[in-house]
Length: 367
Image (cartoon, rainbow, N blue to C red; front, side, top):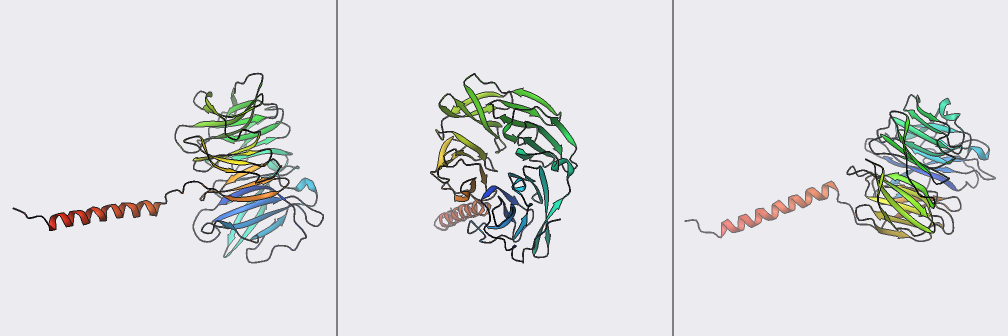
């Protein structure tokens, strides 16, 4: 069991490694530490591979300067975190390493937070994984391996729903649809497949021509007409294509980043799509208009962006690269209306009409 105390100082290791992966954790309930960020860090000569857990101040839109807790993942480089997937409930997450996957549970005790490493043999024995994903309903967990092996587990029983050793040559990207029915996956050879999760079977191979490679994929999240977004390389052309998930046919294309894309991500409310380039640029796109709303040049200068994670509640992203670690960026996009702002507007509207009616009847002579 690994643990940490929110009231104690993290272990006094030497210079810690670069951030290799990141994930937001939105915990249920109110109070302090409702929004957290977990960093996976590589090892260095003076520090083992570690996990850092930070508090996030939503009002100031900043991470805490020091982690709430810090735990060692192991002693050698194969223990370094490669990817993190957080359960929608916010109480547990899975971290991938070169050896397999490890499950952690967050436990609150009084005013502290502990991180407990769970014993999960079916996850620990899967080997190196490129992709991890929880379904929106939290009932399924999927892994896509470097060896092309796809596994979909029922959560939390870890009963295998799908076990396909030859799903791909090697996994490139993976995502689960908002309704938790479908899984989309892409391969390093440019192919892409759709899987029906409950039936545990492949549904369709996405069509492509001889000069096309499908690279990154993610489903829409706004709860309206469902789409699948994919990045498409066609010769020297870099496109973002949209597919209708009722028939898996292409609806249209858009040139957004206009350079090779290394990662694709969508905000939790589905309003924004983020693309990271192989030379360190990032753009954020308004999904409704499919226009670039925010362009971040050289945020990871000269290094491929490996992941982009949207904050669940604010217009903030954390991007990572192996050379530069993690960068926190506040997006320059139109502010969202808060519930209290909508109520205030309605109250102001009714108050204004009340004043108008009062003034009208006060100055009107009734016959």
